[in-house]
Image (cartoon, rainbow, N blue to C red; front, side):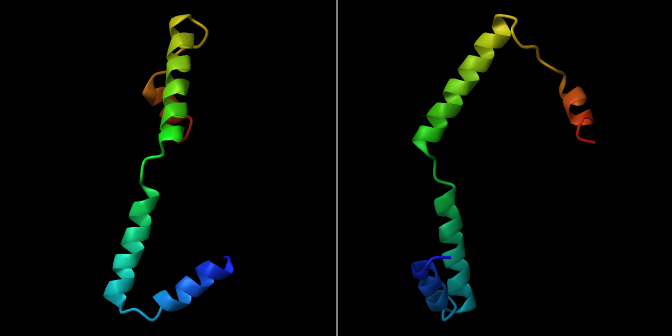
Length: 71
């Protein structure tokens, strides 16, 4: 952890438990914000995979078969 983060942690530990919880929730919520660049890249990937499937370059597998590989 860098020195700024360490300093923030020291200050956060001085907060009441409820205030710390609010802070944690705010930080976690900030991580869930959409990233337009990543969303665009995933959209592009989906389009490319769908096109490859439609051209017969890749095949689809039933969900049960995929999940069976992880059991």
